[in-house]
Length: 311
Ligand SMILES: NC(=O)c1ccc[n+]([C@@H]2O[C@H](COP(=O)([O-])OP(=O)(O)OC[C@H]3O[C@@H](n4cnc5c(N)ncnc54)[C@H](O)[C@@H]3O)[C@@H](O)[C@H]2O)c1
Image 1 (cartoon, helix red, strand yellow):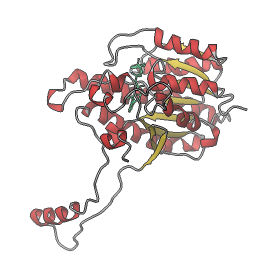
Image 2 (cartoon, rainbow, N blue to C red; image 1 turned 90 degrees about the vertical axis):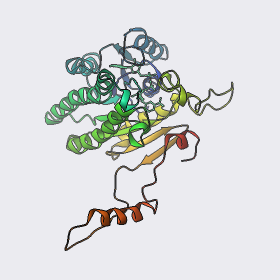
Image 3 (cartoon, rainbow, N blue to C red; image 1 turned 45 degrees about the vertical axis):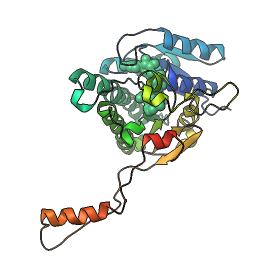
Image 4 (cartoon, rainbow, N blue to C red; image 1 turned 90 degrees about the horizontal axis):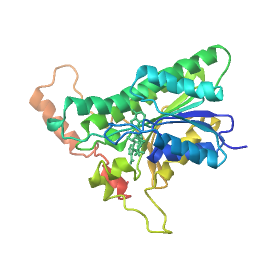
């Protein structure tokens, strides 16, 4: 029996890149897949049916089951139709992968309101929209005695969990979708649902065309060589997280790529300065904080170290 036999997944933005690989591998493991993709440019403009249709054709050619959906995740009502597409075509919904994404990089002082809104709309609002309708469905089914072992997998980014210059819109949204997975997991555990987040590292148009500075760190493999940066490295983790075997994985954030899965830990205290009985003088407090910070307890990883394999 295949790992995802009997499961039905919605994967947003599955017409290209990481989502396409997730759709292909999950289908190979027995999952029926709604391949959602608006099919636009990397900055969110335009649309095309071909990316989603092509992935559906690939899955069917390999003997799997899939349907295409071309709705935008940014629209609350359209997101409901994405969820209904799974139920109408395949009778139920088991797994949601919030993967759709765009980029509009600008330094904060140059960022237009539209660039902020467009990126937050796809990553943050879009992830909410799809999760909201899926969770309402899973809760309703649970109440009716039909436990579907729902799985929500949000796609975060090192840009959100480590930070990356030029991406305040994207990074803020990506930090938020990781937090959203942790929170939704706490809300949905009682209905048999898990929610987790991944932070992929892969060569796709978002890291090649949209951010040429990143592309340099993700070279194409030579023919016959192991390809460290293919987006295919992300799919095994997501496939497993979608399975019943991952039922005890709750509210985790994993970085994934290059054949490696990193277990991430978010905000947690690593030191403190405290005074009781009287108030801190600001300068006195600053002095103590500088001593504490100088110990290096808040030293952070950065994206360059990750891609160079130094983390
Ligand atoms: N490539 C990386 O290294 C990397 C790193 C961190 C996070 N991510 C995240 O992984 C996800 C997948 O990105 P990718 O690198 O495969 O890029 P990609 O551009 O190849 O794929 C993203 C897909 O999302 C679709 N999409 C965009 N807006 C949509 C909308 N409103 N509704 C439905 N579909 C929409 C696009 O048409 C595209 O096919 C994104 O969320 C991205 O932010 C990627």
